[in-house]
Image 1 (tube, one colour):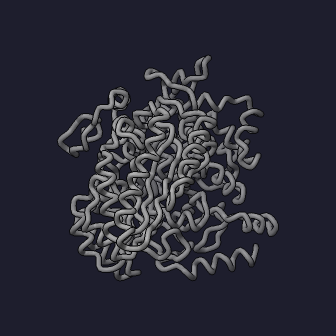
Image 2 (cartoon, helix red, strand yellow; image 1 turned 180 degrees about the vertical axis):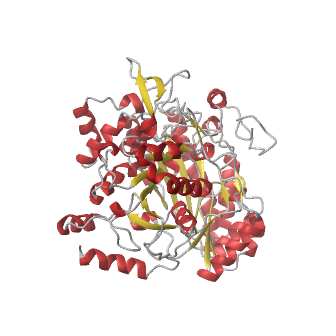
Image 3 (tube, helix red, strand yellow; image 1 turned 60 degrees about the horizontal axis):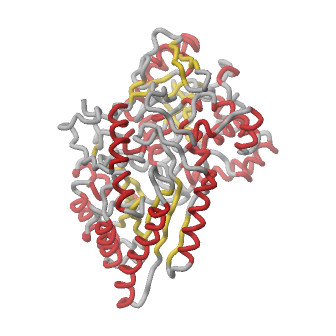
Amino acid sequence: MSRKLFEKTDALLAAERGTIYKSRDVEVAIALAYPNTYHVGMSNLGMHQIYAILNRREDTACERVFLPDEEDIEEYEKSGTRLYSLESKRPIREFDILAFSVSFEQDYLNILEMLRLSGIPADKKERTADDPLVILGGICSFFNPEPLADFFDVVIVGEGEEVSGEFVQVYKENREQGRLGLLRALSRIPGVYVPEFYDVVYNEDNTIKERILLEPSAPRQIVKRIAQDFNRLPAATAILTPNTEFSDMYLSEITRGCGRHCRFCMAGYIYLPPRNLSIDAAKQQAIKADEQCGKIGLVGAALSDYPDIGELCSAIEGGLSVSSLRADSVSKAMLDRLAASGHKTIAIAPEAGSERLRKVINKGVTKDDILRAADMVFGSGIPNLKLYFILGLPTETQEDVDEIIALALLVRDVQLKHARPAGRIGRITLSVNSFVPKPCTPFQWDPMEAVESLNKKQRGLEKAVRKIGNMNMIHDLPKWEYAQALLSRGDRRIGKLIRLAHAKQGEWKRAAKELGMDMDFYVTRQRAFNEALPWDFIDIGVRKDYLMNERERAVEGKFTPVCRVGSCKTCGVCT
């Protein structure tokens, strides 16, 4: 054991408020793993929520584990220490269940690294009865867990608030039935997917021919679990610590899902129907924030669409922070409240520079909406504005790309109007990332644009931005987003590539060449509407024919209105 590692862990724990310590003498010990560093993982609200829910059970102890940073990985290897949990410093191989909460495809290699450091075989077929049951949860389990099928015994598809309790109960009642008996029992829980109970047959052209059910008791379709009562278990910060992105801020999810139907946005579809915390419950969260730290961060896909946002902001006595806001629903009162809390930057997401392309993606905001929002931001005294854009959207032309700069210049004119009388000017930041066609969206059949083409567009934008004062541009690398597309759209054959890429320190091209695998088959290939997709076995509630129709409406630039939850049956979720 490494004293150096233990001392670092003790320092992290000492800075926390709200940590839950439970006896080892419980029926079920769960290691809740986030496949990134402590700083990143403790910024994830889903991690907090499941940690709190599981620890409310008297029969369960849930402890956290994160990916060590590079320096600590060297110390693990040098000292022979196995990866351990924070709370008890117990090796995670000694837990009954190792539950990964995975939010980003880029963390898939980190899953294998954590298993390696734990001494747990990555391939589930190589594990023994001494190893924990390894399960996958988090948003990456919602849409396409197939690339990870080799590594996980069980996948929980959907929101974990309700299914987690059922899962623990069934586990307790069937753990003595042997691995196969336990997996059979777990697979009968709605939303639980056991990958080894299915096989996939492929056509000569490498597309999927059929999925074969190997276990008669398992369901053919996995229906995504949804938290029916959003007010029952509000997602909020369980542990306050300065060692996160939000530094001792209490986070509260007041809205989940988005009914705007932006056609590129996977979260907008897999979290349907949109749900809001009641105003009374949201005010209770504000009171908790004031009591615990004096500042609250509101979390949600479309915060400014929250129907009682003005009333809630007025009720918040301490500091207030928000994520990005919609240009067509942001209010001056809200911005004034944010400015009073010391906010220096507001983010809005035009996504595309041209009106034409915003219609293609069903963004639902106009140039006038964006300029009006910018006017309110700068007029409230907030000096900096971040604008999110996407390159490579379906049907994009060079004219659409040029319109990004044209729109940014109009926003800068608005900024200057306010900056000159004030005698100071802030900064406009363009955050420009590449389009990744995601499962469960109307663009799931579309190809990703070639990396070389995206690089060229980025360079052109950067050159234009450098000529404009008080403006800068940030972006991810298209080659990273290519890997993201591969992992989000791949089938279970991608598991071999993930293992080899991990062994080769993330060199995807080299690993694919060694395996003779064509990554473009998954990333840059146009898929037919009648092709069987790797994720078709997951029922997210949205009908596939609805997504097809939305793809056709995109080409025509037709607008799809906002969800009318409960009274509309168009997409299928509310049926």
